Each structure stands twice: as C-alpha cells, then as structure tokens.
Amino acid sequence: MADPTQPRGPGKLAPSLMCADFRCLEADIRALEAAGCEYMHFDIMDGSFVPNFTLGPDICRAVRRMTETPFDIHLMVVRPEEHIARFEPRPGDCVAIHAEACVHLQRTLRLIRDGFGARPMVALNPATPLDVLDYVLDDLDGVLVMAVNPGFAGQRLIPGAIRKIAALRDRLDRSGYAHVEIEVDGNVSPENARLMRDAGADLFVAGSSGLFLPGVPIPEAAARLRAAIA
Image (cartoon, rainbow, N blue to C red):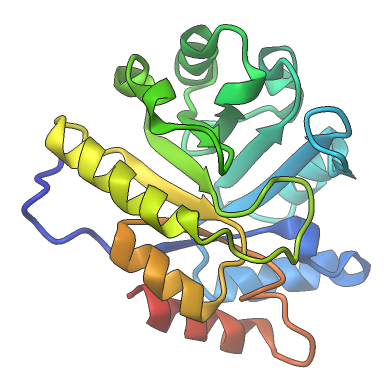
C-alpha cells in the first residue's frame, strides 16, 4: 500500500483514440508509442447512457494488432457488466465503469479483476458525489473523475472538478487507500492538467484539448503535457 506522505510517481498519459485521425490511425499510434504514452484510452459510448456513439469491439481488436501498450477502456454504457467481455480486457488493462450505470457495482468490479485480470475503476460524472465509493474501495485500482459531462470531446472544464479531485485524493489518503489512482477525463489541456495534477490526479486522458491539436505534432503536444504533469 502506498504511503501518502511520500511523493507520488510521475503522471501518466492515456491518449483518447476517439480524437485520433482515423485516416492514419496506425501512424498516430506509433507517434503515441514514441511519446511513451502509458495507455491507449477507448471511449465506448452506447447512445443511451450518453448522447453519442463511439468506437466498439472491432476497433479495439484492430488496435490490439497494432500495439502492445495497455488499454484504458472507459465504458459509458448502460449495464456495463453485459458488455465487458466484448472488449476482451487483458491483465494490465484498465476498465472503468460508471457508478451511475451499474446495478451491482461491486459485483461488476470483481468481475473485471477476477474474470479478466484487469484493473477495475469506477467513473464518476461531474454531479455524482464521492460517497458512492465508500463500500467498493477494496475493489478499486482507480477512480475516473469526469471533468466534463461525458459524451463529446472539446467541452469546457467544469470548475468543480478540481475541487472534486482534491477531495477524492484527501479521502483516499486519509482512509488508507493512497494506492488507488485518480484518473481525470475532460479538457486536459496543459494548463488544466497542471491544476489537476496539483489536486492529486495521476492518470490523464488526453484528447482534443491537449494532445490531438491541429498543426501540432503529437510528440510536441505530448511533451507539453508531460511538462505539466511531471
């Protein structure tokens, strides 16, 4: 178990592939690998839990053939327990399910760990209180804090997200769960990433605000984010 009095490790990047250029997806993945990104993030949306459709099992399988980088699978779907197997998570992958979408939260987290050997995470919408985590902390490797309402890239940061990250970090550290990582998703620009990092975030989902930028090569954008979360 991590010691909250010790410095945290370096921040990690999980590029959101929904923001990549699908005309040259493999080239983008090679650039992300070269930039040392720790995960490939998949935003899975079903058009019901969120008002959008994105990605799916086939694109995940295709990317598996392109890279050995672990996956960070964010299931923004109703009844995620019925869909986890479709994405074939592996040991080392992260799988985040929404507390708001899951009937039996603890059971589904245990399925992620025991059934697939992956790292279970709970995702929280901006208005969802931290209290929903109280009785599943033993089953968590991480918490994904949404800094925007899920569904679309390019949204503005909800200011309360920074306070929420800080409150979650304090709550985890004080209750003996300092080892549980905090991931953040939504408007992760270099400027916001620094605020998020200072508040206690460990893993950063990077999309159209910080990594996939018009006219900016991926290595250059990644270097800016690395500097912000160092």
